[in-house]
Length: 119
Image (tube, rainbow, N blue to C red; front, side):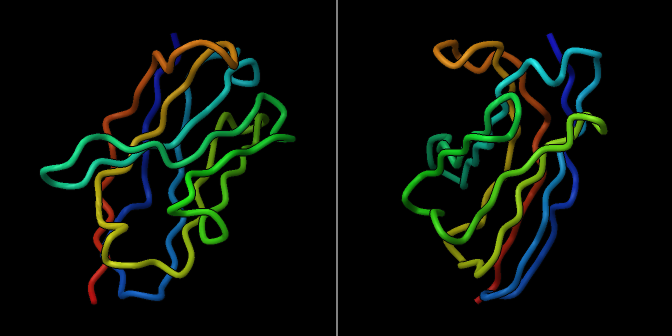
């Protein structure tokens, strides 16, 4: 298991940008696939995107493709979510998650960070 702590959330106007960070504990961070999810009030948790062990492969939900970018720095045990061209519908609590293999389920979760986009 890996422990995850998100940061970087806040209030931003529509069209603005934010970068979320997710710091992981443990020496095996580079062996985990990392993902970002979000949950808006009254809605189910939604997949945002994921990044492979090395960072060489990423995949995004259609709703954020072209606006959000996931990256990671394995030397710092950190994964990032760069969010550009933010829309009010991006308002949610954002969570990072980790899994040990591509076909596995995400098994470690952070506590979440709130992102609010005003119109």
